[in-house]
Amino acid sequence: MRSAGKKINDNSIFTNWGIFLGKPKSAILLIFSAVLIIYFQVFFFDFNIDDAIILDKIDGKINSFSDLLSLWDDRFNNMDYRPLTFFSFGIENLIFGKINPYISHTINVILFFIATVLAYKLLNQLSDYKYTLSVLLVVLLFVVHPLNVEAVASIKSRDALLSLVFSFLSIIYLLKQKDTLHIKHIFLGLIFFFIALLAKLDAVGILIFVPIYILYTTKIKRNK
Image (cartoon, rainbow, N blue to C red; front, side):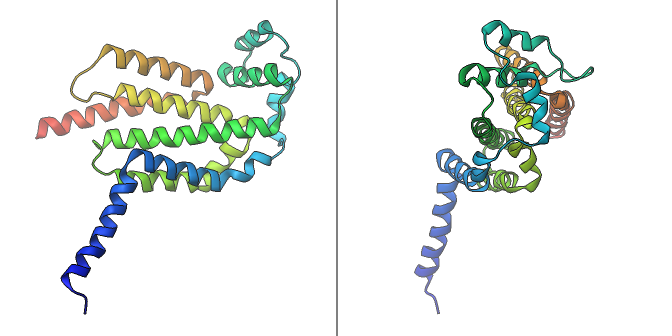
């Protein structure tokens, strides 16, 4: 039969682990490890069929700064405008002389890691940092979710990753202060929202999420 002292020691072990994992540096390190373990093999992938969209437009064709700037005039198709994505590949081409699949895949994995860290920051911000361990578990579930494989493993899908990163930044700043509005935060939030749109139109969802969240939290405060 266990003594009371033994039970206290057992509980303290779990408590200490919770405190350790709840710290931002420890959480980010764990997220980084999870991303690296899950997506390490992506570093060595070659091009796939969808990547031809990028290669045909950019590979070996960006040889000067003016060529790089010209990418802002191109459209992904007649209805879609994603200049930031093409611009990022143009920078790669200008620096390395061509689109290297290993470098491009590495950048995609880094962008995904940044997106997961921002998701951790945003969820903690929305929950007033009360459930840091639960938020960490949610983010880790997001990391290992198979639906993310295509976005990370396909070079062409960098548009979605860039849009996600800047969308998270936009929401973080737009909702940074719940009680008071600061022009600086609103300005930065709108700038990041505009940049996210330049990567992919997925960022339009911010126009729905942010107002609904503000109205919902305002209603709760009024009821209290």
